[in-house]
Length: 130
Image 1 (tube, rainbow, N blue to C red):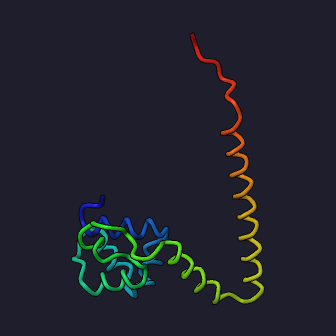
Image 2 (image 1 turned 60 degrees about the vertical axis):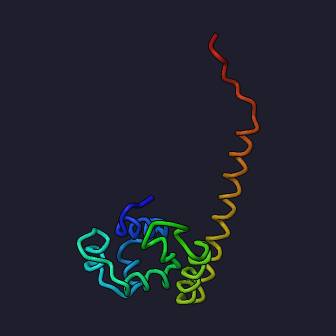
C-alpha cells in the first residue's frame, strides 16, 4: 500500500496507464505544478483531490488515507468513458478504422488465450531427475 498521498497519486495515474501530461489535462492543471504535487514538493489541496476523484473515479478515502478501494467506480467504466470521449472526436472514417483495429485485437487475444490454454492442457515431456 502506498504510504503517502503523493505515492497514491502516482499509483492512481500508473493504474490508469496515462502520462502526467494527459492526467493533468483531465484535472485542468499545469503539468509542472502537478509534477511537484506528485513528487511531494507541494501539498495536495482539497481542490486537487476533488478534481481527481470526480474526473477519474478515485475514492477520496483511498487518496486521503490509503484505505479501501482505489476507484469508487469500476476502472473499466472509467476507461470506457475516456474511450467514448476520444472516439466521439474522431471523423467517421477514423471511427471505422478504430472499430476494425479493436476487432482484430480481440481476435489476436482469443488466439493467444487459446494457444496458452492448449499448452497448459498438454502433458509435460520433461523428465524428472533421479
